[in-house]
Image (cartoon, rainbow, N blue to C red):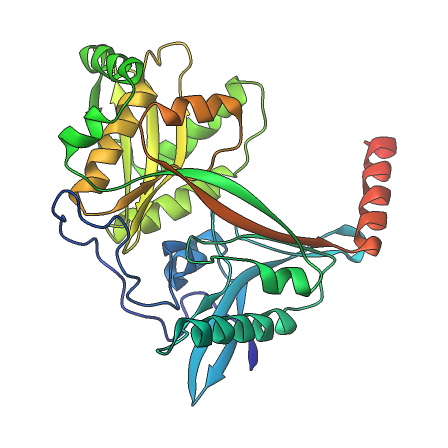
Length: 340
């Protein structure tokens, strides 16, 4: 068993990058087999973690027979008053344990996954706060629960890579009409470079009066890394006057295309976001990939996402917060209010 700090762009043994698969026939099974269980998502790959948290991410590993059979990346964030938080890097929407269970009966594989997961958790560095959202291959969080973590379930929508005509037929009439009208107003293009997309995203958030979840530099770094490897796509919708009405950023791995970032100019959007998502869904289907809306947290986005069809899927979350972390967080917040 091993805990190690990963240096940026170091010679870590990682699998060859997965290229998008060729399109599958309509009606095929929606989930491609995971070819390397130790990198179940794009977010587990070293290049992504290097871009999301350069020089800062780490991982714990479990070995058997001289090879790694389990790994779990994380970011250990140092905070004020001596606090430490074990979390996911910025713009990284899923992580969790990646385990190679080998062959054998399902019951034996399940026990092996549980044991490797247990050994991974035992190696995590001391931290007052832990929070990770599990990737789609994590089918339960029982080991986290037995180790004293709090667990919950969130949901997302997935659309299987069927023929575009079938996906279109499965959509809500209202959604199709919004897309048709948007297609009359906007042209789509892969025209925004990473830095421009990051600036546009940040500006729109600021104009809405809310703080951005992500720093502009982090967005630019991950989008640039993904585009350089042909593992991501920035799509923008332009009006007839050349103004950008909206833009989205999607990334993909060997099985799934993730709807990761979305931004729009509320004054001229006029259905551009729906049009952009439809283009991303078609692109994912052409690659033979499941399209993941990457989160279903409010009534508003549930109604919006439901219009595109698809199936609701669970995503597990595990978190833990110690009493001392709660107390020091309260003190830190009190200090900032008083000295603010």
